[in-house]
Amino acid sequence: MSHLDAIIGRPASWLNSPGSHRGIVVSSRIRLARNLGDYAFQRKLSKVRQEELVARLIDTTTRVANLPDALTLRVNLLSDIECQALVERQLISRDLATSKRPAGVYVSSDEVYSLMFNEEDHVRLQVISSGLCTNANLELAVRLDQSLEGVLGWSYHPQYGYLTACPTNVGTGLRASVMLHLPALVESGELKQVLRGLAKLHMTVRGLHGEGSEPSGHYYQISNQRALGASEHGIVDQINETVERIVSYEQLARQALIANHRWRVEDKVFRAWGLLTNARTLTTEELSEHLSWIRLGAALEMLAWGNWKILDRIFLQCQPAHIQLQHPDTADVERRDRTRADLVRKWLSTPATELN
Amino acid sequence: MLDVTCQICAKRPATTHLTELDPGTGQRQELHLCATCIQRLDLKLELGPPPIATILDMKPEDGGSVKIKINLNPGTATVTASDEERCPECALAFSEFGSGKLFGCAHDYTAFADKVEALLRNYHGTSQHLGRHPVDIQTVAAGVEIRARRAQLDAALRVAVADEKYEDAARLRDQLRGLEKPNA
Image (cartoon, rainbow over all chains, first blue to last red; front, side):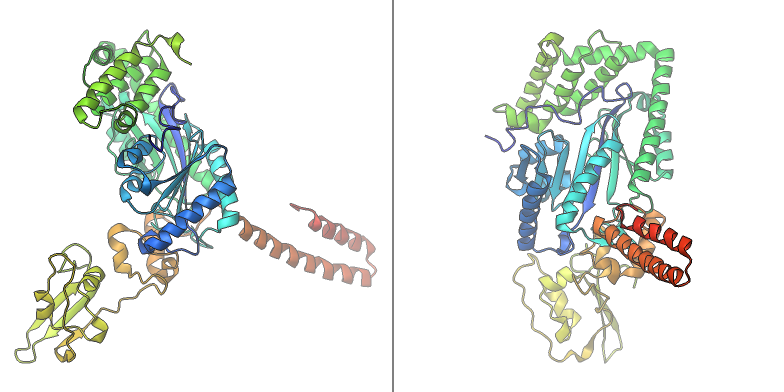
């Protein structure tokens, strides 16, 4: 029995491939950082006050947001595996998952909204969905933020804007991130140059799971570095523009790869297919790498098989904590790698007609 | 003050700097400490710091139950820079901000205004927020403007009526009515 029974087996809101831009844009995320005026920031807040803060935020959010069938969890009462599963579903940060301090999370039933309580800031409000839809996500985030603000009263400075524990977030408290799948840019070696250009535009690049995570499976998260000095829409517009540009580079790189080295791409894609449909044991990294080639193969219509729903299911459900929470006796890595391989073989052989 | 690491934990930045002069030889000894280690060692510096040699002897292994005897005759030791500027609300010193880049409370932004200003300009290229405001601030600000404008129009209307400039008065009256409407 896990606290996550209600959500663990189902698809994630942000993973609805091919997303947009022919599978290149996976998902978009908006995050607002907010703090209450009458509590110190996390590092100077006593444990008692942290408990009080989390209880108050859970209570207010439940009342104000009032989203049907939302899930409220006390993160510090969850097991390590449950916390990791929430990270895998992109619902909480890695920092919150490992912190052990009083903390909470409020997740809407569709997992589009998630609010972390007592992270680095008192509230981290996230809206995430698949494809490139930063603008729509911003609208949703702002609407909920305004309702909460009316009750909680955020810490605000007339010149600096919304005050945050880390001055890099001060101002709008906004981080807009877009997750991209960039296998061709990685393969052609052009990615480094693209990333260098991003730094000049004050954009940062992270791995799949945000702050501190290494890129894997050719996935990169692009987000704004500066939160001050531009309006929320200005920040989002700049992210969208940048993403469109990177997408066009990736498309050009894909065309060039096909034109000049089609056999090489085909070899990667079909080797990946062969491996995943036959392997008896698979590590997370192996799966991530090969699944990325299958995703590319499906996007380029190289594979006769192009079942995006299955790709998403494998992507989400074969992560370590997802396996461990749903399959008995998989605490051991070796057993988990075998279960992973079994699941992948089973799902890749599912006929498209059997999917709902 | 330069960035110096605490000599006890060798990790955190030092916030208190003790200097000791041997009255006999004139030799100078220094010890740099962070707030956490001062607390761990229970150093009641406000009562006068103990001699550096005493502090060094108590270097804690577990950070637990080390107790020190307070030097009631602090003639040989002087605190030179322990009273670093701190936020009156959360007691954070700006040097403590350094490692994790996290503030202790919202008041730090005003307590360290000069440093914050420079920090924000350096990172964001500006220190002026251009995004959303809390709804009530907006309403309040708009309310103030409307009240001021109404007072202006009211005065002008009275003058116009007194001067029998009825066309002007009608125009002013329409403007006043316009102010009453929402989103005017």
